[in-house]
Image 1 (cartoon, rainbow, N blue to C red):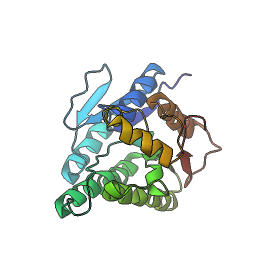
Image 2 (image 1 turned 60 degrees about the horizontal axis):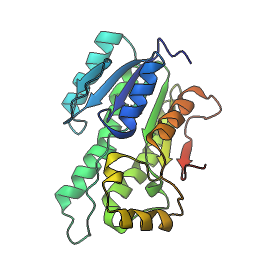
Image 3 (image 1 turned 135 degrees about the vertical axis):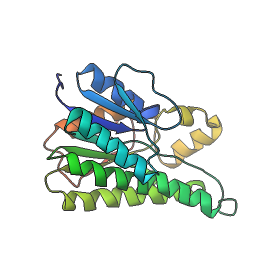
Length: 229
């Protein structure tokens, strides 16, 4: 697969799905701009530090992409945070921080990136927690992902020249997942009827399929509930 000439901007590219996706697309010849915030990316492709909860930093990022590459073909929003705890321990500031990064930050990325996209693809990494696998400890995260899925549908209507798709994976073998209490994770997988963790590579390849497959149309919500699906 030769993706040379394709300019791809990926948020959350310092770890997890974003890092894996950036690595695979880079191998296929795409031009990558990997966005990070706290953890610096030490890769051969282009990287940029940006806090996506800061609108001014996003504007500067998009200006950088336009000035350096003169276009943007694909935006993949992987950046997200979670602060799981009980409702009576969860502060307003915590709830708002999760929304600011996961939902508002992604909205701003789409808003400003769309200005330099004549066409192309936006993939917003949501979660099955947006629809039916929600957890009482992660109600702020789940609400942010439900909003993100809805936002993707609205963006698809607003930008008919851009394919906008929400991807909803279930549990993925990211570092944060693997660091969880094993018994808790086992019970969660059983609760949501997931037999095996999705791999980061599976999710990254599904994103690439969304980018390249014209049969996956704008406004779609693509679900990945199990590694066997």
